[in-house]
Image (cartoon, rainbow, N blue to C red; front, side):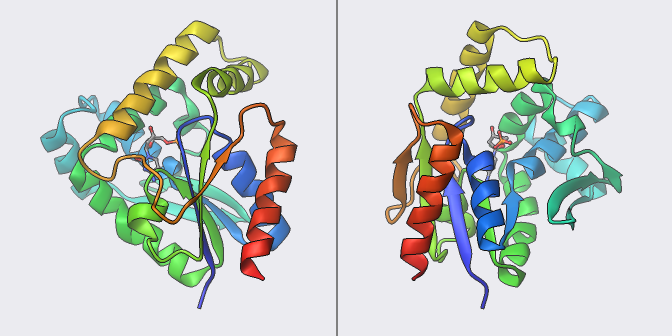
Length: 222
Ligand code: DC
């Protein structure tokens, strides 16, 4: 039996950095499920499909293959055999991912893939609905939050560090828009599972937050 840890929360709460750090410490794999929605969103963008058009996005899934591979412990995401791990990080792929993630056929398309990985591996899986829908039986569930301003500042700094032109106000606006979309959609909205531990990372440096979450996990696994 594999051990599964579910980490959910809004964009910029530190899910990926914290989950990656904790997974490394525990010797688990880290699974970033947002990458799957981003790959489906990128696919729709490339096909010139309106990412809010459920019928068209759904129809395009038939000819689409999304796969996660773990190379030297690092997750890579493949779209129709092409490694799109970098391409999915473009800002337009973020909004496309948020749009396609509200489409039920997209969620069911990606569901088994996530479940299979969790069944076969000790993992920390992050996303929006991992504790509520994908892995309701996860041994530990964590819901990470931080204020929208702090989350936007983190995302803004990441973009600047990668030389991506960005404006803080715009990053904040887009983040609030995505929060709204992700929390208010009819299917699998972003919300804490009833048995999730809430961790607010506002005011924490990310290495402090990683240490906090590792401590919490170790206490619960003992
Ligand atoms: O974590 P992220 O920013 O890479 O996620 C991209 C989008 O995908 C996000 O706006 C919401 C969606 N998503 C989701 O609906 N369910 C998940 N388990 C993961 C991501």
